[in-house]
Amino acid sequence: MEGLRIVDVNLGERSYRAYISEGLIWRAGELLAKSLTGLTRCAVIASKPVQGLFGGPIAKSLEEAGIGFDFILVPDGERAKTWEEAGRILGLLVDLSLDRGSAVIALGGGTIGDLSAFVSSIYLRGVRHVQVPTTLLSQVDSCIGGKAAVNHPKGKNLIGAFHQPSLTLVDPTLLETLPGEEFKSGLGEAVKYGVVADGVLFKAMEASPRDLLERRRPLLMEVIYRCLSIKARIVELDERDTKGHRAILNYGHTVGHAVEHLTGMRHGEAVALGMEVEAGISRRMGIMSMEDEERLLRLLDVLGLRRPPPRLDPMALMEVMRRDKKAEGGSLRMVLPTGIGSPPSLMKVPGGEVIQQLEAHFHG
Ligand SMILES: NC(=O)c1ccc[n+]([C@@H]2O[C@H](COP(=O)([O-])OP(=O)(O)OC[C@H]3O[C@@H](n4cnc5c(N)ncnc54)[C@H](O)[C@@H]3O)[C@@H](O)[C@H]2O)c1
Ligand SMILES: [Zn+2]
Image (cartoon, rainbow, N blue to C red):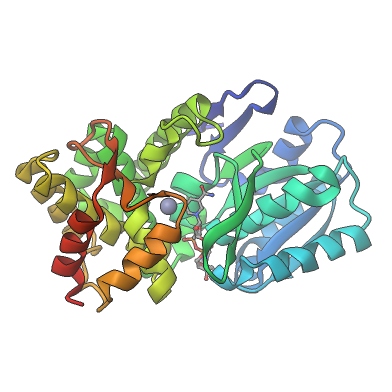
């Protein structure tokens, strides 16, 4: 197939492939049949708007491949990522008689991906999961790596599991209908990959921000491919996020998750804000140079990811961050960038240092 790119995620018996290609959604059935041996049935999880957009092509290609399926509709966006919704879906999987040879397909953004991965991880002690990401954020980031989760009233992603997909199908043409704000949110994660691992990617985005915002295909394909390749290598080193390698992908997320939790801001936008604050901490601590910090701020700016921060109480942010998984006593474990494209360091940052930077950003 022309323009097909493949990212292999090598995890022994849990290895899988992410295919990236224009028009791939029309080949979903064929690729599922080829990649998932002994496949019996599928449940396709989607929200109504996304089913309206892409349910047709997915259904057609599954039918053509002779794969039986049902759609399960869930609320749109973050509202779907709840324990209650997971329970409701599990009940439907039982009603649909999905067996251990079945697969659950996530058709949607990161919320649907995380939720359906979680459900797949526990239904019958685990059934296969297929990611068909439809947002930029999910195409550059959440569609591989196996982090499955729902939110808890006290924090994001507090309930979850590791459950790698068996197959990931990335079709960048699906992004044509994505609202501008959602597209930008995905760019936040892409910038993150540039900062923590790939100076060439960062430069490519710096050189053509307009093409990127206009979703020009060759550049978009390249960005998706580079981000997923980086993530695959990191996940291979540290599948369950225990060795420190995978933690570098949390750059921007300590502050970002707290902002997201308190304001309901989009994930990638909150991460962009988090990257800004955490780069500030890094520069103040003499780890990141001022030039690199400025380069980052400039790129976030031209991509529309530097809007005035919401008014937030730094102490409230601290409280949420402390409750988050990265807290350790009085200080916070944070991923601080060391430069553009170079591995960041995982450090214990004194609470006072964090508060000072938060105060500078959020003006109480
Ligand atoms: N598992 C991971 O590794 C990982 C990584 C990053 C983020 N996440 C999670 O991902 C979630 C955010 O995902 P998201 O940013 O994709 O948001 P999302 O899934 O909420 O989707 C955003 C909106 O875009 C709409 N949409 C989706 N695809 C569309 C399309 N092609 N055209 C038009 N509209 C479309 C949806 O209907 C929705 O309203 C967060 O919950 C975050 O925690 C997970
Ligand atoms: Zn993220």
